[in-house]
Image (cartoon, rainbow, N blue to C red):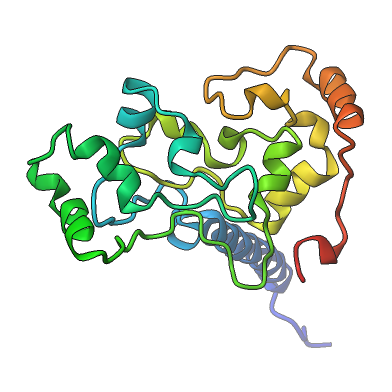
Length: 216
């Protein structure tokens, strides 16, 4: 009886199956990379601002506390952006004629607010409350990174839901003493998990993972 299939059919089938699996793997890897990469998440991307404000200079060099500019971070869902008056409280005396600060002086003269570009900009369908996290012992650097070392501000975390849930499921990994919340250089102890569990109990931290916590 004549041979129905070509003698190389088995080899072609194996190569096709292996090639198909590799192709699917490459597509999944590429999709994951794009989704987690700076192209989509804006991680490590410096955004243009009306004034190239340096957190490194103001925090590390001048020793200004986060709350001096972000006045409502302990009491409101919104950390707050500094009013021009806050900037001018120093810059009416220091670098008062610097060209780089002309937008600040123009805002002061005209009363028109500076249009800062949000770096950590959550979608409209996400509810986030700064004051809850701060008052439960979650440090600024846990979400925003070492802003005291950033000449220009950028995101260090994606702010994706799975990133948030990692903390909500295991807050003991990230919680710190409340008096250390604004300490950018804070280093967790070697026994962080054990120490964190004590703080979770002391601060009455709940492991909230239901949808309504963030989607209201």
